[in-house]
Image (cartoon, rainbow, N blue to C red; front, top):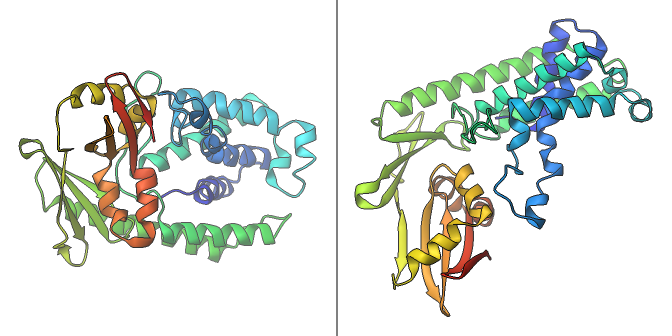
Length: 327
């Protein structure tokens, strides 16, 4: 659901509704966007791969590390040289104090809550546990909400420095938010009625559609079906082998052990809804592809998004008993 614009806008609307002072409002908004600044550090994993959560929705999306993140950002943003460069924005009002820090942390909690509602979730209690928590209600990006948030923020910036709220525009955004929420909740409830407890339901990029995953371990398959709020269960059913090894099995287990030791593979398993494996032998090495069948079912069949789906929904490894590398 929540793009960066929505993460900034919702705390802003809440702060204006509560009639917060500008420095407290600014701190609330700063905390609301702070976790997504992980985009500035995820490159570290490209240079030095590690299984630590240096990824989007990783350690910055936690109660523990999030506190130190907003404290550092608030301290830096409240320095005079920084404020001098943000004239006309609410950030120029920032002050570093226990109260503004509390508001910034409240903004961060709002961010974590919104991401908790979206597919994929967040590791709220890391480093105690790396488990991700998600209500699986919204798609990672809900197009209608993103467009509404962009339009609303464009109006706010056009009206600088007053940053006044147009009540009609604000009401329109909140109505869109409530409508999307209602459709999503109704859709998930309806989708849950078409399967038993052995299935998992994930929001599709289509507002009215859901992806249903069954782990059929007895037959070594992941079964995928689609549910549409208006059409019910769709005929587009798919089956993915959990392990597809072609054609020689000799040496595969030791190669798989090498691949599984890679931090990139550990992180891929951590962020995926499910993990299927294709493996084949080439020039004495095993080529092992890990992929998320949910991502492939949602995006991989549509030509323009197929390459993108492969990019963030799969990882390929060359491996043997002596070691492994991502390719």
